[in-house]
Image (cartoon, rainbow, N blue to C red; front, side, top):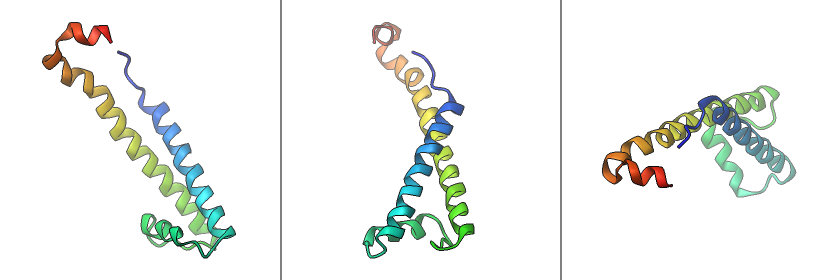
Length: 96
């Protein structure tokens, strides 16, 4: 089984989180009465929608969150075959 690369996964997750963040901000600007927008200030402390600095802060914070999620995911994804090999045996892992 091939190992998952950290850097590629980190940047892909970072871009995904940033796209979702920008879509949330655009939706907040378009429909300010929606109740789901309370999640942004909960995820990003000291977040204000209207300022440019706050928007950039949210982009950077979503990038960091994406990197953290990717590091944890890749670690466990790469660890799983080695952890399950003693239980199932090497032959079972080579078949899949």
